[in-house]
Length: 114
Length: 113
Image (cartoon, rainbow over all chains, first blue to last red; front, side, top):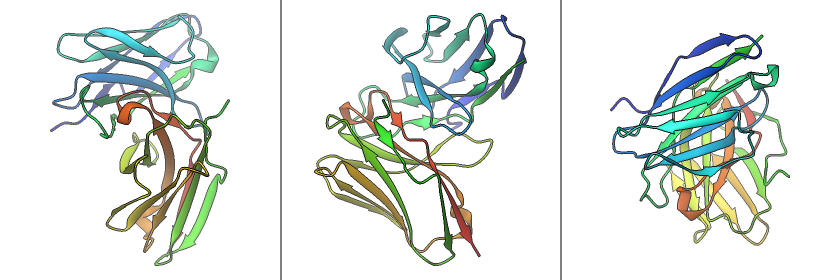
C-alpha cells in the first residue's frame, strides 16, 4: 500500500503565477482533504472533496480551488500566487463512511513563492 | 479564533522518563480527537486517537486522556525514547473524524539520551 502520495515535493513559483499540486489517496479511501501549513503553525484546512465535489471549505479565498477525479485523486490549484502562499501543502485521505478513523497524510508539497 | 490550543511550543525530557503533552479546545461539539507526530520534511503521522465518549485510550507506550468538562486532553509517552523527538500536533474533528481536522500549533518534543 503506497499510502497518500503527493507531487511535486518541492516547487518554486513567482508572484502572480498559478500552481497545481496533485494527490493520490490511500487505497480504499475516497475522500481527500487539503491543508496548508505555514512555518511554525499547525495545518489549516483548505477544503475537502468527496464524489468529485467540494463538500467543506475552510477560510481560504477563491484563488484556491480544487478538483477530484473519478479515481479519487485530487488537485489543488492556486491562482495569482502571493508571497504569503509559501507553505507546506498537505493532502489527507479518509474513507467517507469511516467513523472514528484517522486521516492519512502525504509527505506534502513545499511551495515557495518568490 | 483558535479552537485548538497547544500552549507549550516545546518540551524537553530525559530518555526513559514520561513526556506529557497538553492540548485545550474550545468547541464542545468536537467528538473525536487525534494526535499526530511530524518529523521535518515529512507529513504528519497518526499516533493515537480518542472518541468523546471515552476518557482514556492506550496504545503501547502512548496514552491519551480526555477531560470533557475541562475541554482538555493530554498525551502521555512512557518511557520516552530519543526517536520520539518530533513535533506533536493535537487535532479535533466532528462526525467521528470524517469532517475537517482542526489542529493546534504543535509542541516540539526533544528526548535527550
